[in-house]
Amino acid sequence: MLKIENLHATVDGKEILRGINLEINEGEVHAIMGPNGSGKSTLSAVLAGNPAYTVTEGKVTFNGKDLLAMSPEDRANEGLFLSFQYPVEIPGVSMTNFMKAAINGKRKYQGLEPLSASEFLKLQREKKKFVEINNDLTNRSVNEGFSGGEKKKNEIFQMAMLEPTLRILDETDSGLDIDALRIVATGVTKLKNEKNATVVITHYQRLLDYIVPDFVHILYHGRIVMTDTKELVQKLEKDGYDWIKEQFPD
Amino acid sequence: MQITDYIDNLPTRKDEDYLYTDARAAMAEIDTVVNASIDATGIGGSVVGSVDEMSEQDAIDSTIAQDLVNLNCAAVDDILRIEFNDENPTPVEIMLSSEGGKKVLAQSRIDVVATDGSKSQMVVRTNGLASAANCVLKIDVKSNASLDVVFVQTERIDAPVFVSTSATVEEGACLSVSTVNVNPGFVRNNIQVDLVGEHSQVSLNGVYEADSGHVDNATLVNHLVPNCTSEELYKGILDGDAKGAFSGRIVVAPGAQKTSAQQTNRNMLLSTEAHAYAKPQLEIYADDVKCSHGATSGQIDQAQLFYMQQRGIDKKTAMKLLTAAFALEVVNKIPVESVRNELTIEE
Image 1 (spheres, helix red, strand yellow):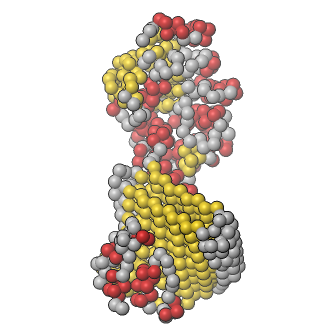
Image 2 (spheres, one colour):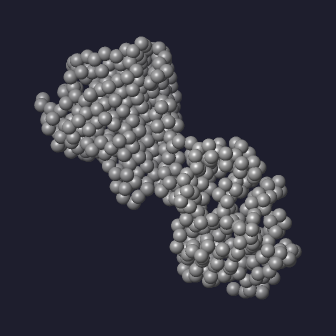
Image 3 (cartoon, one colour):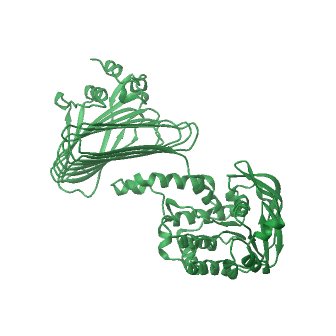
């Protein structure tokens, strides 16, 4: 589904990704872990097409297409979904208008007619129920005044609406209390199927207790320095990242 | 004086109040002056309308639009007078129209009185203008009356349009004037409000959206007596080579204590060629007042734009939603529901 080859990227002229190689197939769950500043969030931003980052080298193919040549919206409509570490507040744009534009953007990309108002509302109702989000959230402006937990739940609601094939969760667990974490993780798990893949970027074990990874990668200084199975998570939780830093000096 | 003399008297950019709009140059091509046609609906019952011949008594003293008013008085034949009594749930709708293109100047004069304790709304639409225009309104809001006036222009007019409003607001009365200019060709709006009675209030709101052309809002609020409130919020969305200006003058007269005056102008610039000019002026001759002003210009928030694109919303649609969100603060202040609905993206 996704193949990353020798990906280098910079932000403000500083090289953050220094040769990432990673292959992700349908149905797989990958965890990307690593100490602060190792490039985890940069990787997700680059894959999503954030214009603040510049790719200087490498290749990424998604569903056989050149991902890096696509606009952010085309990447999304092709099936890539980034759950933001800090979901953006958009005062004055209602969740309903936002979601309708997103759904119909995807349908247009697929050559489908836009959903009618009633079809849209029905879909929205179903998905809200599915991810257990408060009815009130869709009547407000996008993320405006939402608590940290509400923002993350809203990300999962959007994921449920858009049914992406590649779900990238960027530090989704940060700032979540245990109940919100459970709802978010349950949502991601319920939406998992053999056709979609999940990339979980995280510091901690706790999210991976719910979303069990098939592979765990350690990103350090802009490279994946180690790939293992889920047992690696326990070792990191117990020993921290110092041994990585020692094993892979700059 | 000949009409051409009046045109030659119009202010240029050397005039402090016309720094961003050269009225004389804008009217330089005019060779014919006519009356604009006025269609009014909603007159009847407690809303009394009449048409009178213009006379010398109808002259208006204006600080920011005197020469335009003089030109108007010199050539307009008839005044439309509207008197609002009681409470009127349905707004009066006025449509100004003209033809003739750039060389023709169409003028109109409307005088509005909101009688004691009345509550009314009025919408003035200028989409029907197809020539240059010089529209003048005189508004008297009597004690404890409430009047909302909304100017709406949403279709481009390929000729200069000047709309000048002079208002007085008496004790305990409320006036709001909202101005909407979408896709203007060349527009200058003058609004002068004299707060003459204590505890009177005025709210001036404007939104302008342009990807070319020129839109200049000039306001003057005279706080002449104590305990009055004025609020101004103007927001502009400028793209292409559009030029937007806002000049807001607030004068607090000696003795006008406990004045509260607020003024805000915010612009969103979508291109490197678009320009926004802001000129706030506060003249305060009293010592117990609360006055503030602020002007900003900025761009689309890149984080918001990226977030929307990441959800599959194409850039153009995302920009449309974001600019509409920026304008919403002003749109929500427009007291006439029908106009608000016209300007809101459907849910």
